[in-house]
Length: 348
Ligand code: APR
Image (cartoon, rainbow, N blue to C red; front, side, top):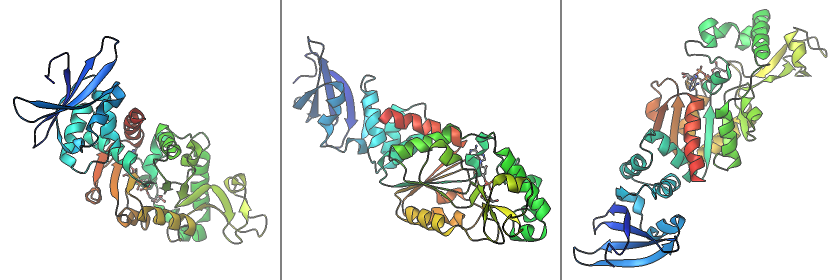
């Protein structure tokens, strides 16, 4: 088949044994036909197979791991179909992936493209979040410049010693945080994670956050590793109590003991079930995505080390923990998740 007769080159891939071309032409009926050729040498080219319809064109390359080869030319009309393959095919060579990502998503940070590919090709994915996941819902984090621990010494409010020996300040601090949650809603980043659970792209969220925003956004498989500020109990007899009773500084109605939120204080054990479930999921995960945490607090900061899978770190500030991650995206949680999701949605 000569390269003319109305055939147009739509895709050229560099391969050692000779470039691979995908040709296309529009028939009189307006239907697009596609054919693949392998250039044996200057003179002759061998045409193999032909299909109809843009969505089937790339199937002519199925017996090739063509995404492991280099792109030489992609026709604009084929780009969206190639882009979908780039986002949904497991690719082993980072440099060829970068070449295809640059061709298909020239204006997108290649780490965002990597993340979208890894999320869609991983068998099991766990997301681990920290306070940075909630700051765009107007909840302060702890250790960045506007964080809680820049205003107040955590030892005076967030420890078992504070609960036992400094109850008025303890109660005032947590009552203030509970009140501040009243007008708080999850943001688009929380909703993206909930949609990825719906799409079976993520299995579990382990969160250090006590604000309940992942569940509020629709995520079901959430393990609250540091408990929940939304639940109150008596520290002496464990009797549950209403939030309003704690906020109004009442004593336990059962034993007159101290009321406290079900958050994990420094010095306390993490909830066994939440920890075990998250650890089990991470140990068998193909991908762990860590979002909005300084990873300064033990033992949650050990969890990213517990996977043999790939790891992605999305955080506003990059620190000395980043060397542990395969991909590091310095950015805001909401915008980054929305950017990744924009590519995920293009793969559907
Ligand atoms: N997007 C991405 N990252 C963000 C954002 C955002 N919008 N806002 C803040 N960050 C980053 C900060 O730069 C910081 O590195 O999130 C991280 C939050 O870290 P911390 O404030 O230390 O919060 P976290 O890691 O969740 O703390 C763990 O410490 O005090 C305890 O119990 C508390 O659960 C908390 C634990």
